[in-house]
Amino acid sequence: MMAIAGFNEEADYARKIYWVGAVIMATATAFAVIPQGRMPALNAGVGMAGASVFVAYARTPFLRIRGKTRRLFGDGPEAYGWGLSTPKTWWLFVVGAVLFGYPAYDFASQRYPYLILGLYIAFMLSVGARFGYVDRLLDHSFAARQYVQFALVSILTLGLFPAGYLTMYFGGQHWITKTEAYERHSRARASREQT
Image (cartoon, rainbow, N blue to C red; front, top):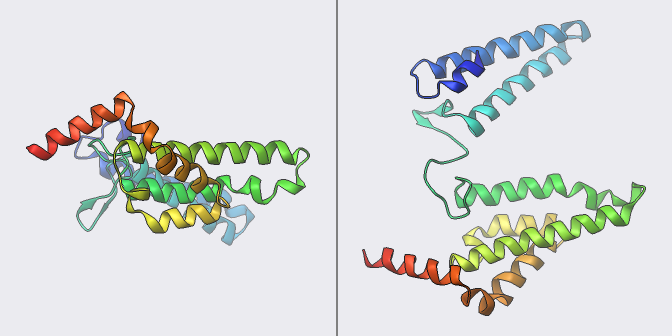
């Protein structure tokens, strides 16, 4: 039922079909786990309901709270692309730093700890450099004014993300302003300000 609703996002009945399917799926999951006990069944049902809410938020326009549709991705273009607003992008950085931080915090128990740690360091530096470059290229303020998220990501990545970010944001300023893309963005920004 939920798949049918997903393919008919514009239909009026699609939202109702999605949520009826979510209730049926959560209930069926709970009943399937009942032989293991009540708490595992409750946990399975609540987990499936939570997954349905997450999917509705991330992929569909079916999540309405107080009459307003809540979605992860917007319809219009956003600064970082992907259809994500700037605060959502930075909060996803925090979540990503928690998820990808595991190899850095647990590298000592691995068979090849230095390889995993090296990959983590290279990845965090390159992600930080990419977003420092984009912020400078689009003439955003430092960390797009998302200071709390920047501080959290800095702590969670042990300073690797801000090292890459600051290098490209401040250190690459002269190099970035000489690129053709920067000139194109500057002209587009100037024409928007005139109108």
